[in-house]
Image 1 (spheres, helix red, strand yellow):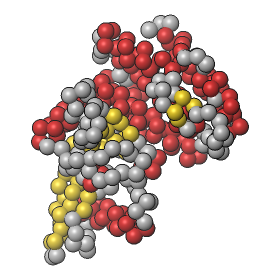
Image 2: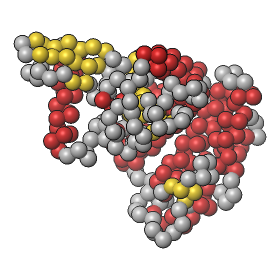
Image 3: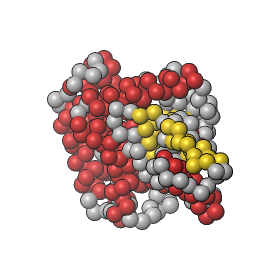
Image 4: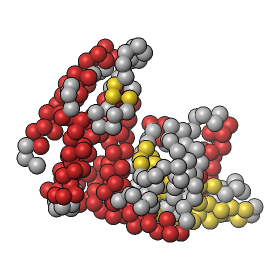
Length: 292
């Protein structure tokens, strides 16, 4: 996980990784020859060193009841991140306290939905990088396969954000991470689509998506649908709150034409199991809707 390393040139990437190794050595209690301060790769410890002093590691991240730590203070929280939209500025004390409480409650909600959801976060998410993005009016989440196991949450502290929004964002990015790991061995999309073909439009957001993003979205929205059905069945949300969330996540599976029909013109660039899998996802959601 390189936090999007690669676009800054080899020297910058090597320097970044040297800092990680130095910081991890100090955290592990080993002396390090470096005299510079540094952060661990996950942003959970900041290390201070000076000549003739072995260094001191200070934990800066918040530990959650499940899986990942919450990084609000490392360079990843404020620096430009490759393939991650928006900007990041430092959080103040009030915002940090709200982030801590909201991410804790969101993780507890995920755990309460059942062991599969807690295991999902535990196995596939190592760190939640929380960014204050003054250009975004609300909450959003992002991730990139350039930094596997890192989810970026923007404006967790925002007045328009809720515990449910944060839980939804964490699960959303965790499913992308499963798919990104899967695609290291078996890509969902095997080639480039014809650039003259019309874009695939998401029936959930209305945005134009490339083929891979569209396919991944089918899996992500299916998972979110089942997650909130589980939350409703566990009594974690009342019906008045849960039903609109569930309906929104089911909407793309109810759209016409069906998802698999939208992918037919991309069949030549898709893995052979992709269209049957997307059809199966849609049918499972439709079946579940009959008993919600």
